[in-house]
Amino acid sequence: MLQPIDYRDPSVWSQWRQALADYPHVLKAIDTVEDCEVNLEDAAITLALQAHLEPDGSNDWLARFAKRYRSSICREFRHQHGEFSGAAHLLVIHLVRYLESDTDCPNLLIFPVSLWVLSQDLAEFCQAVD
Image 1 (spheres, rainbow, N blue to C red):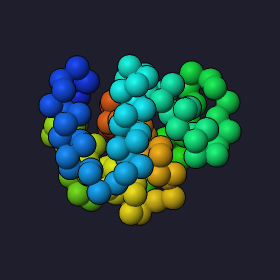
Image 2: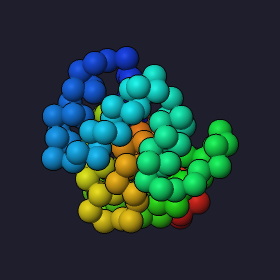
Image 3: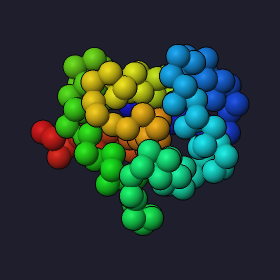
Image 4: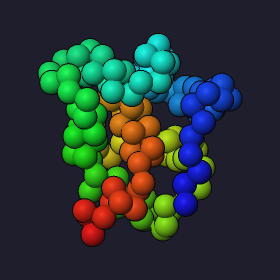
């Protein structure tokens, strides 16, 4: 079972910044998420506009966008991790790197997509892929 992310813990944000320092677009996304008071939907819409996408502004835009990558994300997690377990804040780093290297997810949206996916019940999220 995934251990939830404590967004109030500044060390989590520091770990992400340190581990993902080679990804300037991810650092920009981290700043944007923090600037939006960790409202992933607001941050994702802001970042989508900067990435020249046209989000519709609905409350579930990020969920619908993230589901575009469900098949590849679930396949990766099953391949690398078997069961969905571990500290979600560490899995964010893995998922960011995976989305960066192996998908066409826009760079600015990789971080909010990763956070959104790992805030879900992954077994349920991936059930549609089975």
